[in-house]
Length: 523
Image 1: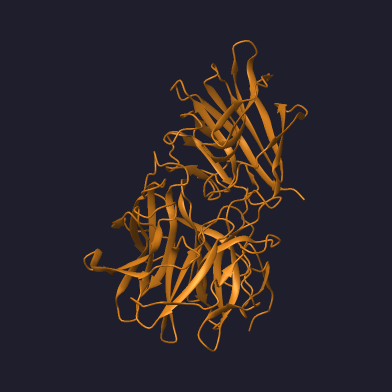
Image 2: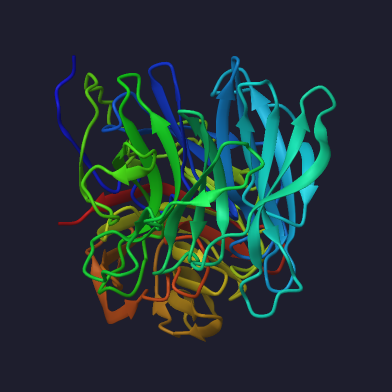
């Protein structure tokens, strides 16, 4: 039927955590978390599990996450499909610090993966990581993390709760069932239920989101339990082998192919020097099979993730290259590779039509703002890459700036920007923030003419900047800057983004015009 080949992990490089995978006929879809980045919940599409493309994003006009802290907003969306309808449940996290979780869960639906999607239906609050199970008896069940602030210590994930959802009433009904207490791995999250050969199988993520992350599987004859844990738990983990290429393996979902082969999608990371996951948590696939006694096992044996995995017996189906390495901003709409922070791109501050062939961004609040931050960026998907832009900007104050940004969150960024100095006039400068500690570098490199070009060369966890006056020769700044702190080791849950931004902290909305943006992997 198909040509046997290899799936190479990660299948979704760069910031793409918490994968939720489904199959609808011959099409496979994966939805991932986006946290504060907008649009929310990208959907990736495949027909062979080997080739994937970014098809669309789901949360494009449903929510506004202004004011939400870093690494909050959209957590662990779960996509499902039943009787011709796509369902997406997700959490909007307003505060995530201990001891409480100010988190609200919603459901939206569509008859087409491309939308339109319904307005959000509120489900519940105080818990996170929702998923919706469609039972064969017609009932629908919402699962959540059971968060208990009364528990001592930081581990307050006290198991998994479940409640019936009524589509007719558009709300949760009936009693809340606590169906799983978790195991000794602790930090039980990310529940998904699947039914196979008369058993309900409960998948959870345990061990936290770091090095000890894992997948736990339990099963029961009744959906409300009691659930027995796989005697060889965990089913998947990288916790005991720091030499593995794929670390932090966990948070999995299950899919069956039309050829009756089984795979799990799971998150992972590839730490640079074994320490810094600058690309963020990514998505990988593992081939699995059912044992005679009814447990799920990696087809490769053991419980450690593989980089190369046997692909299903399906016809290969590739897609046209749509990486958008050179964006000349000649379209009337932004390419789907671009993202903004906490709210949708709006023509009032980000326009491709005011000056044809240019991206015009009007200055917003500071780069630390949780509100009107005017920044667009794309995921860094390669360990080493080069980014470049050309801009025209006429700042009149040091409070006005525009340029090239490498951004993890408001506490971790590196910014190469054009601004104004009282003595030198228009000049280039560098600022950075490392785990909340701001530093103004103070280069004050004079720039003549109307525009300049900016370049950043990223090599693993180090960055070198270059610049040129208009069409002049490139000049390289001698200093090398570390972006080791642009990682989820203790900083949050996202990954490094590269892009452009404009600030005008005088409130006059001074604009900058960007002629192009270039992103290219470096060997």
